[in-house]
Length: 327
Image 1 (cartoon, rainbow, N blue to C red):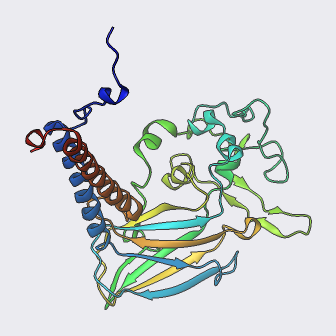
Image 2: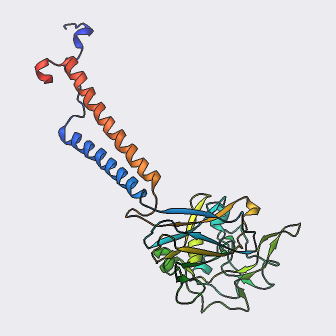
């Protein structure tokens, strides 16, 4: 058997590389699409008006405060009005499981206490949170902790445009702020089940050992209230914004917007903060800075990888193949 020197076994032609034209074209198109989407979203982001107003530091909890803001530019409707909270862990296991699903669906027996989502939990809120012998509907931390600040808006220029305090001329439209799956499937109408003898939507003040009010007493909205649906849709992070209402009036420069806020949602016990945000939207929705950046980075990386593949191919081709085959 003939023996070969290991040097003679060196491959004289390049190993197979991803060099087919259709694959190169596909990678090129993918990178270009990522760049186009990223730049398009970034361009649309620059057209969006967004302004945040913090009020928990200037408006003491338990008080009603008013302040005005003059619009500096024209803003086309629809304009979205959000509330923003920080340090609220709606993604925590305790919050997620603190719910009676039968109550939320409107399918419960009024005289039967709430049923825990997990068998080792009990959260029917006995005295002194609610009156003796009553079950809070919906029971659990999710319903009881709902965002209960009352915010009314009045928009005016030379004359009043709208006023939340006047029936029929409200500024904030709350008729379509919840997800369709919540309105159609998750939440039910318990108007035919709710019995005041056994059930209640009202709760009392919650105080600590020093008699400091941690949460003011209030009344939970009915299950068909879309503001409650929005609140009970879990947020993915501890800092989040949620839709409060939609302003369907165009805002013009120099319009005066008066905010009247009944400050009830106490953020001090958990070291949080709250504010509201006014923003419009683009064809891609709200501001998507992170998404635009990810698309641009993905496009640049894809094109750099493609350039690397082509450069590598030509390097090994010129190194190992005859000159006439490399051209």
